[in-house]
Length: 203
Image (cartoon, rainbow, N blue to C red; front, side, top):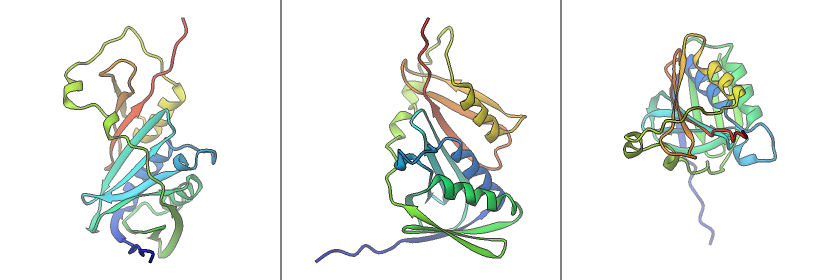
């Protein structure tokens, strides 16, 4: 007899402006093509009372979170790149007040501007990543190099997230490991942590 899984429904109220900033920032790090469906889009969940968004295109990774009102937790589910982009477009027209966000199994729905929008979500597993972020022992041993090479288009995406008055802090704690990226600026109440792979340079 097949076991039927109970659908977990998690609803939360969040600031429309903060959700727009969260999804917009995360989408800059998502893989755009359908050749890697697991990476195509933004993973959304509710953890420890916060709405969390994750995305990666293999070369960089970002995790952001915002405060939310409500009860219940949920595991990450993937909103496709196109659906995330459509939701961001809708939120851009409704940046005042709060919206109701519901994560229900394979569905993401949002009540915004008096309308309910529903998107199909995908139960893919976001790649393991917690071990990639530096721990306290690594942070005690900062490595200094004469220069590093970064893709400038990636930094252009950071500018989209933090605004013109923000700044980006880059740190590396182990050779040949991803750089820890700290984003400071007009983050619209979003807490970010990010990683960026360096480019190989040929002399």
